[in-house]
Image (cartoon, rainbow, N blue to C red; front, side):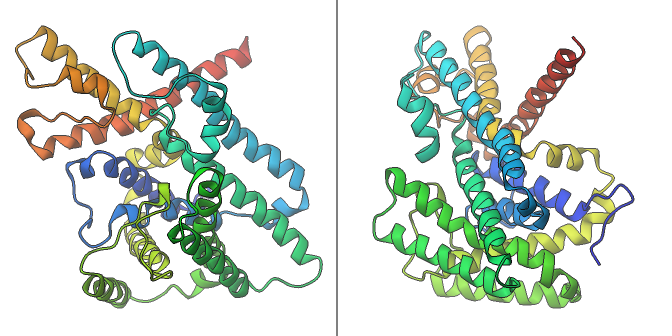
Length: 370
């Protein structure tokens, strides 16, 4: 039986969404001044896979009863916001260029319509939207595929996952062969994520009921397997999924590492559920996981802008580089070069997106009342 609270929330996955958001933000600001087992499980090896796993876990067969309704629902939730924010950040990039900023692409039809689908980095601030088309495609393909198959056979979840794993392996193979540019990039990214989405479905419907190993046995198995991989590879493997590169010739490795990272945090989520389910911070981060992923870089920008103001008008932070701030989107400043201060970036990367989302919620409510 799946553990659910009285309010019908699965707080294990509430925590997973929250920790996934934190890992993604931390990964974009030099680990955010923290170390959440990063030496063992590199965030870039599994953090987006974790989101796909969660999405697959909550996939409902009822979606297949009305594909049109499911398509419209997801299109409104994922694709339309992606294009709207692409437009907003595109305009913002052009605006700050008036003040000497030089990063970001030009405001063109290509960057407004095509680039979000095959690149996602055109206007910098929204670059984490790159995985939205892949998630949408996987959801739609899964719905259509299962709908079609169910008319002829009873779907075997293990075989279905095996098929998705083969698609993921094909994605890694094509990436290694150089098919990771332009529209091929969209293809191989999507193929890569299929196994994680499929594992979410499989875990929900078949594996979760057997997930009863003691914590000692469970972590012993997960960590032993991960340490064996680290020993063989000479490091904790990580992959640049966004550009579909840095894979090895071992086509299964990205999925083994990804599943182990997810398994590790899944058990931690189960252990901490009695504590974290009442945490306002965890619940808030989880509820706003998509805005956090989407707007974290604007949060970083706000912090860097504050540092710039202090540098310009006060005696503080005078080693902050205004020129690098304006020319290098990936410029990060920390006082006295102390890495611990990256934690401030982590906080801004979490808080600013939540503020943006809450402001939008207030505006929507007022518009509905008007």
